[in-house]
Image 1: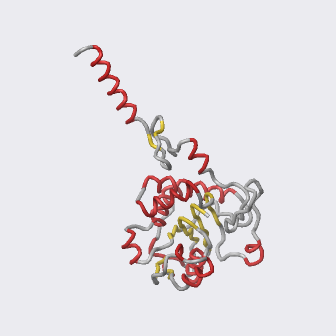
Image 2: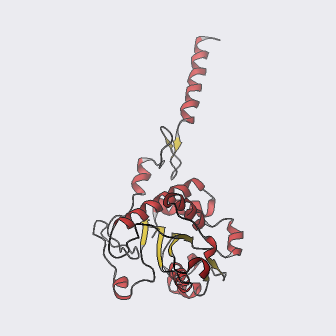
Image 3: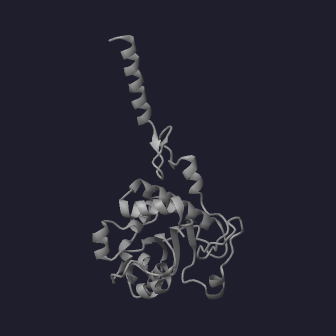
Length: 254
């Protein structure tokens, strides 16, 4: 083997080794140097996926125009309240975060699901560290319950993204997941296909809680996205009717 061929082969081998040692950004797929990062994100995506720390309602996550403003109750929560107790979310449902949620939900990108669950855990810890409206209990919930899919919808999609997030979150909080504590008894039109005004009517009577699992318990309800809040509100009321003593809500995006 000539000297040029030797160095060419050596360079190719080193390139393959360096490629193997690189992680990919879980948001955009770009290569990252090194390996074993807890949150494999490139600097650009990390900036886009930063948590929303201000300019929101701590009770429902409604967003205000100024992201630097201190958290404060929105008019709806101030006047009417919400059926849940604590509330946590990571950031606004837009841009890179929206694409990640959709990729996990509809394209089976499980690596992104792990990253989203990490965001969810961080959001829960921030809400548990604060006091006042929308704060989470520092001791954690008794049970984690995902927003369920109807069996027909589950068969079509293949998995429940909220259940997968709940399972990953349970590893961080060291709390049990009880997916059968809340079931979906009515196969409704997907909320994303309806205007906001019709969503609450569409979802009415869709959930049923199990008193044997819920009575007297503190529950953390988990979902991927909350938009109008109709699904979350209906699910929380079903948990309350089944005897839940407290219901907190954690979503990735708002």
